[in-house]
Structures are given as structure tokens and as C-alpha cells.
Amino acid sequence: MYLYLSGISEYVQAPTTTGYGFSAPVIVAGLCLVPFSVATFAASRALPWLNTHFGQRALLPVGSLVVSAAGAFFALAIRKQSPVSAAVTSESGEAVAVS
Image 1: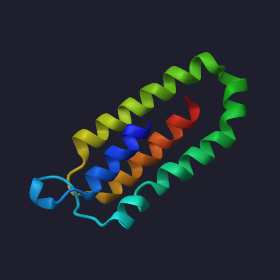
Image 2: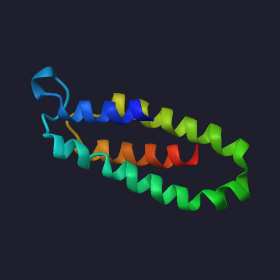
Image 3: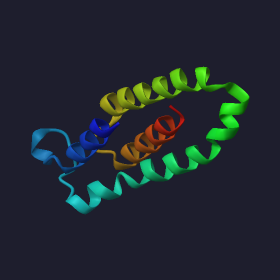
């Protein structure tokens, strides 16, 4: 999880001359992590209900798959699209809270 957060920050701050990244300042990189925090908080509030209905044995693999899918989507789909990074970080936040 922490490696993923660092990777998002690095990517957003990377200069555009590298062929990737947004050349964003540190404050924007931090704001890109806000959806992750909000989604993690929201998913953690729903976790007791999910655990009761689906069980912990089902939630852990599903959360792991969603984190993997979000990382793959980020690696493949992001090309100068800041909203995509926000969507990916929020999906990852939900998955991390569940798993």
C-alpha cells in the first residue's frame, strides 16, 4: 500500500519531458491522494456489514484483486489524464480498506 502511494506521488510530480507525469507541484501530488483517503474511510465504515454478509475469506482476495486491477489500469490507461489518477486512487483506497 505505501509503495503504491509513493508511486502515485512520484508519477504526478515527474516532469512532462520524461514522457509521463504531470510536472505537478508537491501540493497537487498530495491532493491526488485525497480520493484514496476518502475512499478508505468510506469503505472502512462499510466493512462490518460486508464482513457479516460475505465473510472475511471472500473480502481479502477480492480486495487484493481490485488493488491489482487498479494498479494495472493506472499503468496502462493514464496518459496526461489527472481524473484517471483520482479514480484509480479512490478504487485502491476502497480495496485497501476491504483487504
